[in-house]
Every structure is written in structure tokens, then in C-alpha cells.
Amino acid sequence: MITNQQLEKYNEVAVDALGGSKRLDSSRVKLMSAKRQAALETIGQTSDGLHMPESTVDVGAMVLMNAVCNKLLRPIDGSCCQTLPPPNLFQKLSACFFVSSALVLLTIHILGNNRQHRPVPPDVESLGEKKPSTAAAPLGLKAPFQALCRMGVIMAYFYLCDRADVFMKEQKFYTHSTFFIPLIYIFVLGVFYSENSKESKLLNREQTDEWKGWMQLVILIYHVSGASAFVPVYMHVRVLVAAYLFQTGYGHFSFFWLKGDFGLYRVCQVLFRLNFLVLILCVVMDRPYQFYYFVPLVTFWFVVIYGTLAMWPQILQKRANTSGMWHLGVLAKLLGLLVFISVFAYSQGFFDSIFSVWPLSKLFELNGSIHEWWFRWKLDRFAVIHGMLFALIYLLLQKRQVLFEGKGETLFSARISNLLLFFSVITFITYSVWASKCKKKSECNEMHPYVSVVQILAFILIRNIPGYARSVYSSFFAWFGKISLELFICQYHIWLAADTKGILILIPGNPSLNIMVSSFIFVCVAHEISLITNDLAQVVIPKDTVALLKRVGAVGVLALLVQMMTRDSSPAHGT
Image (cartoon, rainbow, N blue to C red; front, side, top):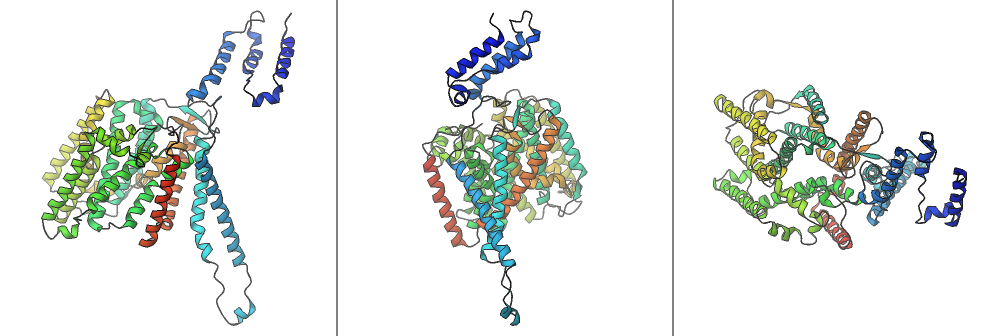
């Protein structure tokens, strides 16, 4: 009879004929031993000792399908039989750069210790001269290299989480409880940490940080719970993204109007803080710039705001005081910006012809197409200009002393305040009812650019008209608001996974503990990156104009060379 022992002998001979077990590991021949192991485990369940139960056959079928299909489909919640792509040239260069930074830091540290322990010559001590300074020129580089080393460790963690086959991933599965219960938790915490604000002006710094903070936390819960599948939640989160762009228009317009600082130093500072983390991730994680869509969006709108206000005639508050014609001038600029937006929005062919030109296309393409950039840009195309217009109206009303911004004072007279509050509440509720009735995202997205500003203005008035509401803020939300950009970007790879399509699993088998541990690490990393960015911005962006121009030119040439090297390469995968 053909027994298992005889089959094992046949298999041993077959393996030897194919070159032995060692050679099989490097050859194209694959032995499917998992099905045999499953059969040995379930042999007691057979009725006749010959035919295996269906569960064993299913295991064999699944292993075979995984071996054939997973390398093509690349499922999120498993990595069996998937081959990882090897690091490309830029990923290897980035690793060398961070390792070199660590070696330089180690060298500086050793030199510093040697100088500290170097004995002072007797003749120097007798003459009463000062000891040699330990803070020599090379030691002045210690802080930036420390920042680069910290960044290198963080990038290694990013790579292990979402590029190496180290941690598992799982699929998202939306339920109302997974979205709304965490939402209730964070808002209870936010109210618990209420404090008195230092100033009671409309949209003061503490209030805008608070606004960014709770919006960012809502967006994080929205992403990790997969709530985009529920259209009413999707539409409300779309308003939050529009509110971020509204703040971009409001904040930059207010700065340029009040300060009048259009210098290169200010521009480079803003661009560096916005793009530093994303540009590093593009190299380390092998992703295109447009993959992190929000940063290209706010960067583009900052350049548009700067160009609109910096071009002649520069309209500033100190000049606007001399004549009312200046107010008409800034309105004309805003009207020109509105025409510019409308032309781009209603002519996709013209839009494509502009942003498809190399090298500009390298910044906005995703998978070889600018469709994603077109969709993101068009969806919130009016949010920034709404923020700029609101800032202009507010600053003019503030200058004419129409507003009452003292502690505990209502923003307007009692009658006007009550009327505006009533309409704001009605508007807020009306939008929520409309969003709850949305059935198709495409239809609701068509209305979103026109109606989102109403919801934003309603929130601002409700939050600022009552004096007691304007005089307090949540320090809990404000803390998260200060690192909102880093939180938004870092979630892509160390909180979510598989390029945001799945959830990172650090602790398998315990979802609650896993989300707590991964969230703690995620927030700590985002906070650390914020500190690193601020430290490096002081070093990389010098105040001296000539030195800054040289560095900008060098970065421009380097970026052009990199784009030329990757011009003919295949586009990176994205979502």
C-alpha cells in the first residue's frame, strides 16, 4: 500500500532531484508544505484515513490563492507571500544622510569632550588669562545635527511601520459607535481643560489653535474609523477641511495687511515649516508630493495670497488710512483673484494645460495624472478667498471701533448680537439637516464650495459673539492645534497604515490596547517633529538676504536635478 512513510520518501527524492532544499530556496520551484502540515493536524477527523475534511482542503486552497494573488492584489490585512520592493536610490541616499549626520554629531561630541578635559597651561593660569572656550565653531553645529539625528530615528520608525514587513495591518470597518464614542470622549476632555484666554479679540491666537485642534482630532477619528463611508459625516468633515483653508486665507491676509512684511525671509520660513516633513517623507517613503494632498493645497494658496497682496500696488493698513480708494484697490485685487479661481474651476482643460507642464507637473501628479489635484483644488476653491474677505471686513470694523472686544462684552450691540446668533444657529442646524439627507458624494460635493462658508461663518459668530465664550478656550484642543499639521501628515504611516487604507497593528489581538499605544507614540512623534522643524528653520533659513538667496538657488538647482533624474521613472503608487 502507499503509506505516508512511502510518500515522504518519494518527496525526499523529488527534492533531491530538483537540487536539494538549499537550492530550492533560491530557485523558482516552490514546495507547498503548508497543506501537508494542515493534513497532519486534522488526520484524526478523516472518516477513512484517506480523504481529508473540507477544512483542510480550504486551508490548502487559501494558501495557494495567497501565494498566487497576494503579490498582485497586496491586501492590507496580511502580508503572506508579498514581496517587498527593495529601497530605491533616494531611499538609500536618505539613509546615508541620516547615518552621516549621526557620525558628525558623534565627532562633535568627542571633540567637545576633549576640549573640556584639556589641561590649561601653567603660564596661562599665572597670567590670569581666560581658559580656551569649549564652544568652538564646530560645536555650534551640534544643535542642528542633534535635530537631524532625532529625525533619522523617527524616519526609521516610519519606514518600519509602513514599508518593511514588520508590523501587521488591518482593514477599517465603520460603525457609528467607533466614530461617535471617541468623539464624545475628546469633547468632554476639551471642556474639562477650559482656561481663561489672555485676550478676548475675535479669532485670537488661542482660539484659532483651539479650533485647529478639535478639528484635527475629529479628522483623525474620521480617518481611523473609516467614516468616509457615511455620507453625512463625510460632508461635515469636508467643512472642517474648508475651515482650515479659511484660516489660511484669514491668517496670511491679516499678517500681510498689518505687518506689510513681504520679504524673502518670511516666505521661506512659511514654506519650510509647511513642507519640511512632507519632502522628507516623499524620499524616505517613496511617495509623490501630491500624495500628502493637504500640504500642496495650503502651499499653493499661500503662494497665491502672497502674489495677490505683494504685487503693485501693495495695499497695507498704514496706507489704507490715508484714503478710502485703497479699500477699493484691495477689493479689486480680491475680485481679480475670484476671476482667476472661476476661470480655473470652469475650464478643466486650461487647468490641465497649466499644471501638466514639466517640472510643475511633478509636484501635482499622482499616478501620472493630476486628476486628484484637480478634485482637491476644486472642492474648496472659494474657502481661502472667503477667509481673506472676512479678514478685511473684520480689520476695517475693528479700525472703526464698531466691535466691542472687551472681556465679557458681546461683539455687537445686544439687538444685533441676538439677531446674528439666531440666524447663525438656524444656519448651523439647516446645514446639518441638509448634510444628513445627502445620498451621493458627487452631488453634495458640487454644492460644497458654495455652502461651506455659511457653516464656517455661523460657527465663528456663535463662538465669538457672546463675551464669555470669547474669553475662554480649551488648552487641551489648543495644544493639539499647535501640532495639527504634523498630526495630519504623520497619521499616514505610523497610525494608519498601507498608505491610509488600513490601521497599524503594534499589539495584535488587543484592539483597544493597540490603539492606545499607537496613538501615544503617534502624538509624541508629531510633537517631536514640530520641535525639530522649528529648530532647523532657525538654522536653514538665515535672516541675511544674500545668504538666503544663495541657499534658495542651491535648493532650486538640486530640486531641478532630482526632477530630471526621476522624469522618466514610473510614477509611485498612491491613494
